[in-house]
Length: 215
Image (cartoon, rainbow, N blue to C red; front, side):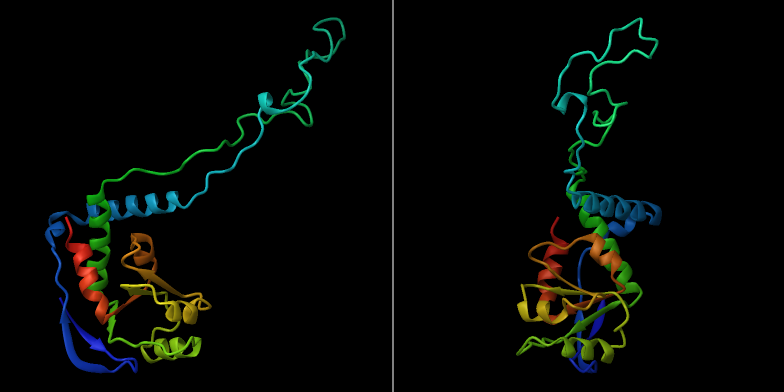
């Protein structure tokens, strides 16, 4: 797959890059690919849940276990102690408890999902490769100018870098449609699927290829 390399002004540099990685997963039909992507995104979102929600049940409330009234003879319904869930201040019936929402998936499924999403972005021409543009200072205006030049300012953008770039991060963190992800720290299907365009630095291509080609 050959893609033109653009400069920071959005113009073609005349150089092209051939992006190579295994397409063996193309033997899988479209329905299966979509299902794998669904499973991976579901796993990612589930892992973000804290799972610390909890309410006190009858056994967790402090108070006397003494029976409020005798079983028979009062003319009222029979009652237990003050911790009865039917009373104000009583325990919660079937309330939420602490739990982990993590889902288990094979590594191959995760990588197939990421490869499938990259493949779709390539086909739809939603990937732009930029020559290195080091920022001398933190400037949101320069990022906005770059996105406007590329005519993608109002779209969801995902910057993919091979290392942590503090100046790029601080320059774009106030832009709600822009997110930066680091290949080394981990790339996920959710961010790729959510983004309308992917912007990849030229010096990050090799790292991305190595990550996608690993079995």
